Amino acid sequence: MRLRHIEVFHAIYTTGSITGAANMLYVSQPSVSKVLAHAEQQLGFSLFHRNKGKLSPTAEAEMMFPEINKIYQQLNTVKQLAQNIQRGKSGMINIAVTPALGFDVLPKAMQLFNQAHPEVAINIKTVHNTEALQSLLEHKCDAAILYSSPSLPGVVERKLSSQEMVVMYPKDAFDDTPEFMTLEDLQAQDIIGIWESGPLGEMAWRHIEQSGLNIETHIQVDTYYIAARMVDAGLGCCLVDRLTAEGNKTEKTGIARFEPKLRFDVKALSLSSRSLAKVCDSFLDTLTNVIACHGQ
Picture 1 (cartoon, rainbow, N blue to C red):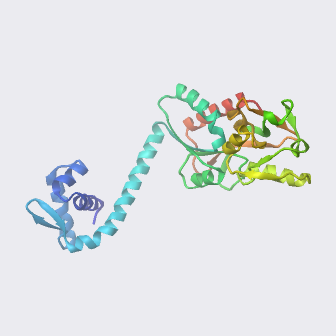
Picture 2 (tube, rainbow, N blue to C red):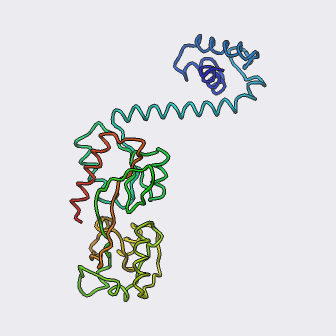
């Protein structure tokens, strides 16, 4: 069977009539009838019983449909891919981004970029590091913007910013509003652990282990946003990135720089086998500038 035969067979099987198939495929009824007849001639058996304008599948058609349906779904996937490629040429960006950038930085960058490029469509997928890397490797996004991501073969890195971990704390826990804190300062405080949140959580946990200090955590979460909300509720302090802290700061919370500094890079990753479109490069430029405006 040819691909056109498969499309027509699937349409008739699904709608139950020549008329329905013609409407689905946006062609004339005679055209559908002609393709069906040609398919049956090549196969050497009938695919449908004719009864007063209605068609019902033969036993042979019933046996063939499951495999035909698989091919039909694959054809749709190919069509969707072709449409995405076409849209990409006319301005379509697919970005996977760490959730921490979504509080302030990403909305501001999209606002500025949209003003300069109103014709470009942007699809943002907010996922954690592992899932973002998987999306990139599976060609589901053009670039992945992550914190402290590992270097991988076949992946091009572009540094967007250097950031640091900070201490987010409930103001009621201190007599003043400290601007700097160390692990010693946190020993007497309840700490909200984010150790399983990804590379930054691992960085903070390694630093605590290497210090030899006895710092216990009674509450552990895997999302920086949740940790920030816990701080706002007065449940303890947490070590988070500056962008998350600033994006979730309230009247009840303060932000202190952590000493010694725990720094990390914000990077845009793309596949070396797929060069980024100019509009994507332009978006990354805008994002870099917005991050810079939030301070280092």
